[in-house]
Every structure is written in C-alpha cells, then in structure tokens.
Length: 383
Ligand code: USQ
Image (cartoon, rainbow, N blue to C red; front, side, top):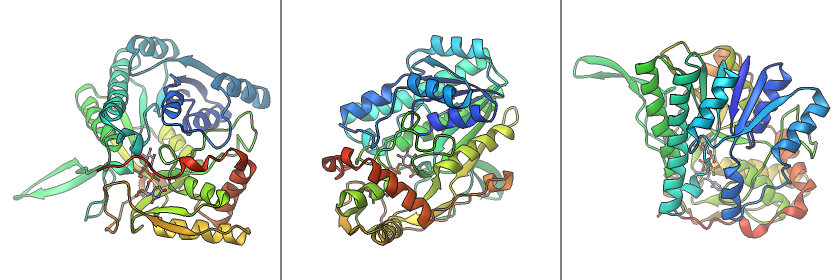
C-alpha cells in the first residue's frame, strides 16, 4: 500500500513510518519539525537524544534495506505543498499524527490555545481539501483522542450514540466533554471529518486513542540512531512515562489531586498494530468510522502504585506524592468506555505487565544523566 504518514518526526509518527515500511508498504512521511520548536519554547527535552529525521531514515535504510520518502511540509500553513505531495505520491491511505499533542501546552495562555487549535483544526481542514482535490479515494486514518469524550456519567460508545428522543430514534456523534483546548481541537477535527464524509463521500477512520506508553517497538529496539522521542516533563510527558522516570530520578511520583482520574491506556506497540488494522480494513466511501484505541483502564493511583511496586522490586526507593492538581478535572468518576472494534479486527493487546514497566525503567536508567528534575513538577495550570 502507498501510505503517507503526517507527523513522521514524532513519538508515534516515526515508529509508525518504520513499522509500515518494514511490512513492505511504500511510505512517504511529511513533517514541519514545529514540535521541536514547541518543545524548546517550554524547555522540554526528550529523555534520550532524538536524531534528525534524515539521520534516522538513513540509519533505518542501512539496517533494513527499506526506504522512507520524506518531505518538509507544514500542513497547517502550506496547503499547496501538501496538495503537491499528495498529488505526486497518490497515497491509498494517509495516517495523520501531525498535531500539537499536549493538553498542558494548549492551556498555557491564549497564544498557546490559539496556536494549538489553529495548527490542528486548520491542518486537518487543509488535509481534507487536499485529499478531495488530489486523491479522493484515499482512506484517512486520523489520530483522535479518548479525551474527546471526557468522563461522562454514562458508558462511552465508539464514536456514535443511538438516541431515542420523544418517540423517535437517531444515531448521533457521541456527545463530547473534553478537558483542554488541545482535546477540544480534536473534537472540532472529528466534526469536520464527519461532515467531509457526509458531503464529499470521504472515507475516514477516527482513532480515539488513549494515553500511549512505552519507548520503542521491535523494529527500533534500543538503537540510539533510530530511537523515537520519549518525554517525561510536565508539558509533553504523559502519566506512565513520567512515573518511570520519576522512579529513576528518585523524586516522588506526581499523582495529581486524589488520583481517581481514570483513563484508557495502550502500549506503543499496540498503537502500531491498530493503525495497521485500520489500514487493512479501510472505511467505506462516505463512512466516518470511530474506533476507541485503548486496551485497558487505570486510575492514576493504580498506575502510580504499579510503577512504584516494580521500581521498588528493582531496588529503587519509589514513593508517591499527591500534589495539588494543576488541571480542572473530575478526580473520582464513572468510566466505562467500549473498545471492541479493534479487538474484533484482530488486535491482541500487550498489557501493562511488570516486565513492560521494568523495560521502561531500564530505558530511563540508561539515560538518567539527561533527566532534568526541574522539568518534572507542573507549572501550567488550567484555572
Ligand atoms: N496525571 C497525573 N500526574 C502526572 C501526569 C498526569 O496525575 O504526572 C493525570 C492527569 O491529571 C490526567 C491523567 O493523569 O488525569 C492523564 O494525563 P496525561 O498527561 O497522561 O494525558 P493527557 O493530558 O490526557 O494527554 C495524553 C496525550 C494526548 C492524548 C491523551 C489521550 O498527551 O496527546 O490525546 O493522552 S487521553 O488521555 O485519553 O485523552
């Protein structure tokens, strides 16, 4: 398959490009490198040095013999360049990771909120028009987020809700109650994409992904020339990844508030397989399909306890701190999402085992000299 990966320099976009090329797909990846600028702005540095995309593509070619084509394109600001890339490559599918991905970043100020929504919503809108113009049959696999739903007091369905209202029945997009301007940007994307399917017959899979953890996939191993970014700071780091680094840095694990916040999680290796399954079983023309891309749920308390227990068994002195919650979110709530669609297509999850946590802790140990303890406590608040 000819697959265009947008955001190929990122935490998930790079391994995805490699994973697909390893399976014989022809991959073109686009990136603007703006994420590296955003990281610099907030003083966030990945745990291990991330080589340039050119360097990694070359290293991957040498190791595997597989080629990944690459162009620098800013999809939010360069719609012509995007059209040109798609018109030339004629992808059968596009995997879209090219968005500002941090909730705290989007909440830092008006400028950050506008920048996030502008980048994400305009980028996706430009992409919809580019697909319409240059490759209307292409299947768009868009990375959404479980955070679009928020934490409603009813079960979360996969994108759609059957509603009985005053004796009539309809199927509506599941009501959204996201928790940050970042999560909101993905809600807006979903609404635009569903509209594109309805009016232009586009084919879209919206993958509402949970919090991803893990530092590598089989193809990348621990090769320093190939590694993807792994953040642990309070802006770009996410819960499990942060906790394993905190264990190694010998600082308390930062549970925000009461710690009952429950989210869906998945291993980075399962992200790859989910994308592959979405590509192999594409949405039909005019179909806006939503999959909830998670494999298990944990409260922050449960996660911190699990990571601390594994860390202690490895000889660390892990301890947990409940710090004031910088976010406005429910700290105790109902959470029951459905996530059967990807399992039905063949996903066999890698769950959060002690071994998986151990592997991440060892990764942090290898790079402990780079841990900047000052970047761990949150500085951006929601209120
Ligand atoms: N949390 C802590 N301590 C920490 C960090 C986070 O208690 O040190 C809590 C947060 O308050 C929140 C939960 O853990 O309740 C998850 O936070 P997170 O920072 O791990 O994840 P989040 O901000 O929700 O965003 C991340 C990714 C985003 C993706 C999303 C999936 O950055 O790109 O869309 O996970 S989801 O959470 O399902 O919306």
